[in-house]
Length: 48
Image (cartoon, rainbow, N blue to C red):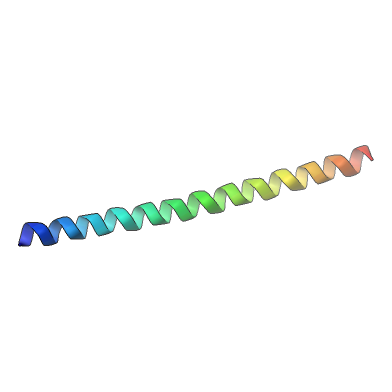
């Protein structure tokens, strides 16, 4: 029973880490996307 509880606890830690990583990666990708679109807008404005 203790081993099972320990397994569940470590699984929870892994899940939390994965969720945090997914959130971080999503936010990072979103920021990159925003930055790229801003740069594209600036280029379009400069060439217009």
